[in-house]
Length: 168
Figure (tube, rainbow, N blue to C red):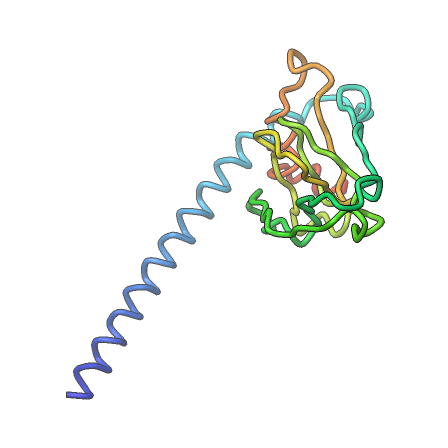
């Protein structure tokens, strides 16, 4: 009886391993397809200053000016590396906010971790997040004119460009 239970557990574990390997293989294949699409977009272009088409760190606040207000705080550890997923669980009170809790990110911004960028702590802000403050460990980027440079492309380039990662 115990042998049947053990065999069943082993069989189910092997099935989970197969599914995980298949998912990883599919993920790797899709990532390669994305890289193959993104990288050629910028290969032949001449280097330009980022500030030509992108606003950087435009909005900042000091949460200590509102000492009793609760804020959501997004620091570098709040980004699930390489996924673009943000964890919005950290709450802080204005008077206890760390000195690096200063940046605001509006809808359609890209946040880029400037600390160990090879870990890809990058995310696209797809909507307004009320009372949310981002760490100064992020650069907040937003296109000056989406007719020239789409905000989503800025995020995609940072997330998937091998050339940009080499430069960073």
